Length: 210
Image: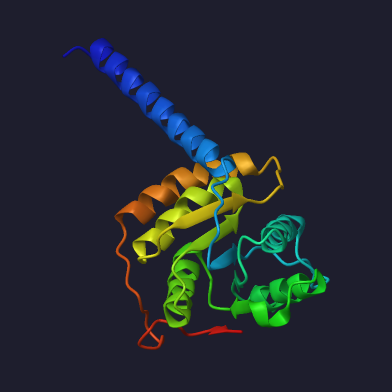
């Protein structure tokens, strides 16, 4: 094979890879923007940045507003807010819970998961609480580009049906996040799923409370 032919084949393969990547990103975006709502036992809101003043960032606020909207419209009677403790020391789940209560959601309807440090742990911890409560169905709430991976994680932990709704917040950095999701989704498709983790209880329910 000549060097010229090799360069041509390499170029074709690179273009095909780029086209496949863009196509996958487009499919993730389209699927995430197409809300699939239905009556569910619980709504799960994925955590995000808390501002230095202790209030939810615009991105996180949009997720919480969507969850509150679904709650008021009767799609569910319970909410799980899931997040970790950020570098500033803010407990995302506590901040999220306080915001929903101020928005009129009854405090006893909001459950906090302060060990939801990523999508995997949020899905695992929420699934454990759902099993304890006898809940089977869920609505996941996050940014549109995150919805497909969030739905996948819950299904891998045995939850079905999994409905979804995206937050009404968009920013230029979504393009980066969408590209990142292509890689992250592949990783989640390939990884193993265990109902418990080191330090968790037998049901994997550490860090979750009303």
